[in-house]
Length: 216
Image (tube, rainbow, N blue to C red):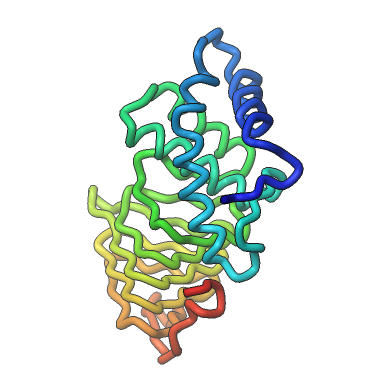
């Protein structure tokens, strides 16, 4: 069972509810009851994710750990949406996450079960296809081009200021170097991706880096 550091289930529920009411004082009632109905499932999903990340203590969640809290707010909003719950609260949770953590991760996006956020500020995520063991650092972007979204296979790592856009297929084990943009392009997998001359991409073989970040 997930241990809530410096908190309890009841106080965490009160904490999120108070944040929502403070950020969005529109007089909407029943928020706590709606969140209560999906909180346990969201915490179970969060526990699965935290337990897989090597640099985090298994079975422990600290609501003051900004990356963990960003992932929690996503799981909470997405769980509520899956249950066909109150969409206004889903939107509020999305905006709360954006306001607190600087991350644009809409509640309808199907993020993988296991992913890691190094620093959440400036991360923008479109409705793309995401594989497990995804690593995201600050100012990384996944975006559509003419309505086409990228496909990211398992174990993709995006270092700061990277972008994957449009009809791109980033295969398993691809590590995107800082500042590199992949636009309507493919990677061979198990590679380090550099920006070459005239915007070309350069691929250098690299072993699978998943075990550097995750327990499997």
